[in-house]
Image (tube, rainbow, N blue to C red; front, top):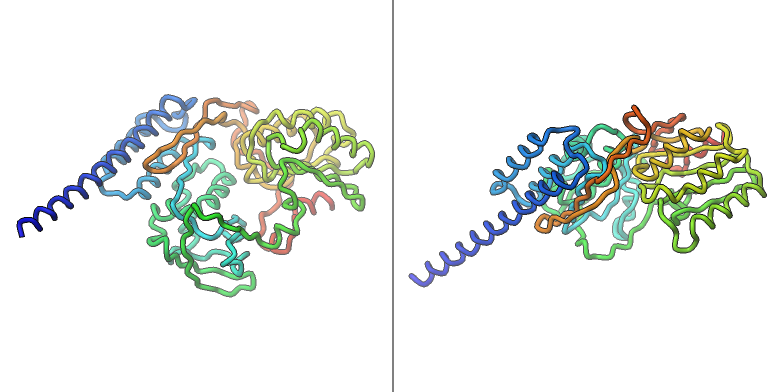
Length: 399
């Protein structure tokens, strides 16, 4: 009996010791975050005071014993969002993820990518997760994202919608092995299904919704590519990433692009930036120099398509084109603000298993301008257009 009690006491001591050790490591992560942002960020205290920032972290540390890992992550996300820097971002590495990827439309959040087991739910909209309505989920996610740019918020709401660490930390899902979804089919039928979390190590064979295969903008995943249409005399140039391609330098690509322009003499040139999240803004310089001198540099011939994902270097390219060419801008407001922090570096929070990026420079791209770059012609981000494979931005330009 005495031996049994000793064993119980020993195991309780081990559990307590491991818990205390784990909590100490969590506090170390929080302190690493505090120190790095305070000392290495260009200026983290333009929107909030240093005192408020520290107060949030001090309160979190005092609450650590009452929180699980996911709740700590969410509290850190909220503190980070208060800084108000679009490039200072937290990326929690969840142990599991949901078998869906989501896209934000004016009419709600839809499943646009899934694994091979759930393809029948492609293009279904999410009504609730574990009985929490989508509208409430979005409201909760907003607390973890800076709120001075609606396009930025929408982009990250969809991005975080699949992150089980965040969903658990917000109290939306309880058991990652059994998550109930209430969905709305494109035909208007309500469906309830239960899905299971997939381990992040699993190599998922993702399946894409049919519109991705039918809309020109999604037809090529190269960093940059173009297509000329003889029927409508349109030259479409998709610039997906501010980075050199392994197959062709941008200088060579740009030379080939303007050779086609000179030979075919298109009546409209479309530069599509919608899927470009940034990189090196200097890559596009040869194109910008060329279009400035081109006969296509008129509001009725040169069009730039922008949207939620346009941030950082792609936004800087868009701003330069806005200021120095006669282009007509079409689409949605950019996710990035015109003047913003950038030139990011990153670090890891090992216990919380989270990567954090932070800014080391401030870019004033357009003096006295605030907020996102807005289009001259706004195009709704319509779910119904998407499921019909209608790209309304391109259609508007071709009218």
